[in-house]
Every structure is written in C-alpha cells, then in structure tokens.
Amino acid sequence: MTTQTFDVESFIRLRKQTRAVSDMLRQQASDYLSTLSLLINPQRVFGEFLQGAPRGSTRESQHAFKEFKTLYEQIAMTAPFGLINELEVPLDLMNTRPVLYPYEYDRRVEGLRQPVRILNPARWVVGFEGFELARFRRLMRDPNRSNAELHRFVVHYLMLFFCINRTAGLGRLLLGLRFPIGFERVREFGDLPLCVLGSPLKSRLPSDDMIRNSTEIAGNNAFEELVDESAIESIEDELKLRLQRVVASL
Image 1 (tube, rainbow, N blue to C red):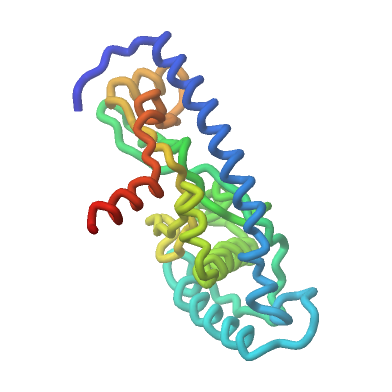
Image 2 (cartoon, helix red, strand yellow):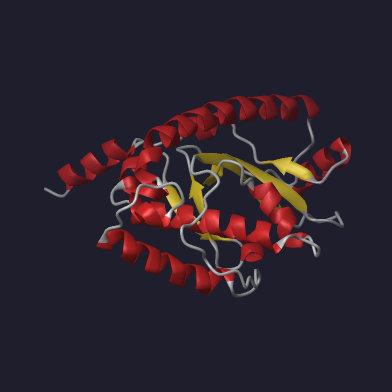
C-alpha cells in the first residue's frame, strides 16, 4: 500500500466529513428499520410460543418453533458458546425492537503490537434493543460470564436472524432503498449469523502509516474508516443500471 504523508488538517477534515455522512446514513437506516420492524416481529412468526402472546398457535408457528429449536441446538450448544440451557416455552424475549450497532473488526497494522479496532461508518450490525454487540463481545471474553446472560444474547441474535430470514421480500425492499441487508459470521461468534445492514456508500482505509500515526496521537487502538467526496460521487443508481441493462438486452 502506498505510503501517505500524515496531514493533520486534512485528516481532521476527513474525520468530520465521515462522521457527518455516517450520522445521516445511520439516521436514514434507523428510520427504514423502524418502519419495517413489524415485518420482523417474532410474535408474528411464533405466536403463543412467545411469552405474553395471545393463545392459539397455528401449524405455521409450531413449525417455526421446531425449526428455531433445531437452529439453537446447532449453534448455541456448540463452540464457542457451549450452552446447556434448553429453550423454555414460552420463550421470554426481553425486547424485540431492532436497532443498529457499530460494525467493527480487528486489523493488524505494521509497527503496532496490538490489533487496531476498525469501525465501518457505513455498515451496522442489527440487534434487538438492549443487546449491544459490544456487551456480547465482552461476555464472550469473560471467563466468569453468566451463562444465563449469554443464553439471552444468543437467543435474541438468533431470533432476529430467523425472523429476518423468513420475511419474504424484505431483502429486495431494503436493496431497493439502497440499504442492503445480509448475514455474516465472525470468528469470535462461531457459526452465529450476524445481521448486517449496508448503505449506498463505501468507506475506505488509508495506509497503515496513517492508521498508526492516528492511533499513536489519539493514544488508543481504534480507527474509523474514512469517507471522501469521491465515494459520494461514485454512488450508483441501482434502478437506473437495471433499466439500462434491460434496454441494452433488447
């Protein structure tokens, strides 16, 4: 990667620009997610298998619970979780309001002993309110963690994945809104699929020299990917491109 001169003033401007753009995108994404939250409400899928839901389960809700139980046993009862907690009926979900949490990952940077925690300003992990991804990570690293709390986190993240994955058309709808949704697996969470919401903007990492200089000045091991004006100008209109391909194929 090309070495870049660390221009403090330019870097500060890029950081401010990145933060302003990220805040706007996050607000837009949160608005869409809030509007669509009824489509991924677990009560709609599981009925009386959830605590507080009205009685009268259907064949669909029975089948959904059976599938979810199998999924839970495949993921929660294996490494790295190793939970022995059985699913109790009705399921007790503390909160089912989807919210956005920071999308972060670790990166090794030449010259630094510890990996740098990188924040992506244009992507987010979707989770239920009150189940912060950062807290989930701390639980995974805590040798004295509460298995009951870990169980709650695993159930809530699995439940979100299950409900979103079963909602036909949601992915196409969000893609049409320019906020594509997908699932990713992160090594520290094993086979647990995390729901990730993207945006029409792509951020970038500068050179390792710039990352190293920034973290040394700030005195921490965190860095945020950057957004410049060229990234905004390069945003493509997906609908326009699809229409052009249709016309070109005739």
